[in-house]
Length: 511
RNA sequence: GCCCCCAUCGUCUAGCCUGGCCUAGGACAUCGGCCCUUCAAGCCGGAAGCGCGGGUUCGAAUCCCGCUGGGGGCACCA
Image 1 (cartoon, chains in turn blue, orange):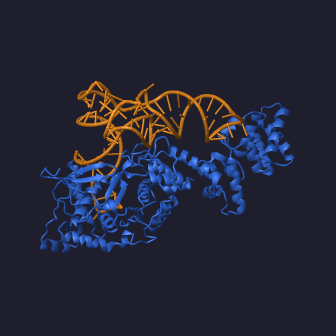
Image 2 (cartoon, rainbow, N blue to C red):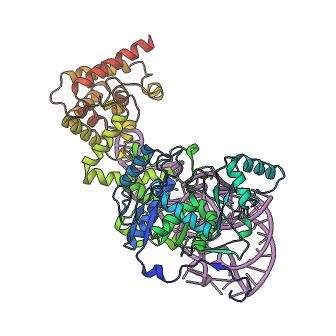
Image 3 (cartoon, rainbow, N blue to C red):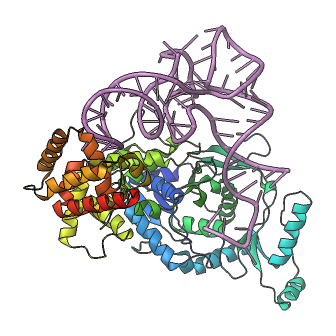
């Protein structure tokens, strides 16, 4: 390509970085809870870094002061930690390339913006937002794409003074001149070319002095010695702009990899419309970080054919950013939930205490724990989990299948009532059992089962004819854990009491 | 309107680079069965896909072109 008179300007990554220590970053902006898309790209950055035994940096991009808050910064860092994505340098742990919060790096942006202007690669623009807005609207009305006219490019001293006298405060714009195509050698997307004629003189510093994303990003990535940038492909179009800044400053750009955008079930970029999009939502629902990680790993990447469950070590060891697909995946909650179930079953066997904590949080959120948690409470939760067994795929399932273990009364599901409370003799059957139970000996699963089966024999009933209505009476549901185990855990008093309530309920409903 | 990307079961994907081993493999979801007091889990089985049209070739899911479809981006947001 060196022969064509306009040999493209290439930003390939040759030599140095392959011998340099890999340094990557995740750069969340604290304007909301951690989004699964950001968590996903952070995770791929992290995998790449741990695979290369590099350094992972967390940088807070809070230059948009109107939308950033401290609360969100805290929550984002927390969610990263919860996910098990840890960083070696960051606002909380420090490091040799700080500060790690953009609002604390203003002097650097100022310095390089000045440098850019000195090099005549950037200039002051005195146009007001209103003026620009009007031009943009006009261009749209004419059906064309808006591009800044460049009218402030070469202002004279007197024009400048006049604008200043009017009270205008300038922004800083990059000066984009015609030139060869800008080539991005992307580790995931492959080679992509951009013609500079499609770019206009974009703003890099606001009139209030704060830098914009494209500029702050370049300054920080360079100063922090970032070698690889893995980010969503909504940023691919920004890359040529950033490359131009690197070039203007005489810097070597990092290697880039643009991940496909995660889609919702309607094939549109994943957003709130599709339900839960914040890591926090999944955390609250009782998903496990290890399952979420495993699930993330399988979006746009498949380590091996015919396998989906991987340990963290395996993931780190197998990860190659070059093998990531550039096809947008759909966020499939059903598969995530299945995978969580796989991890949950394992966890219940290996570390039941963690499951107790998980369910405890869910129960607390649902207001079923009175706020006070004693060792007895935990033991009880552990027993419930034991009885529920592998029905628990996510923490919240303790509510779906076992809320009645934590409530005083029972709410009967309409379908359950229709199905099992409608026969005329149910009340009598429940009454029978109630009496047999009230005067029975030790109240444990085996004994209860014997009582029920004997009663069935005595009355000439199918066992199911007793079991099903009793289940509804005790739990309100048609589905759930084994009846005898459930009764044993509920205890004789509550069973008798719920049976009585059900009998009353049925009688008043039929009379 | 302009720029960029993508295209295998409903979904995540393997295969594509280095055409034949692909009557396209796995997983989730779904359907049927077994187990069973329900549900869940587990096991067994089924249905389900190379967007369309042209090439190239003895041979194309795999290579080329076009079309169609989908997505992302065009800010004093990130």
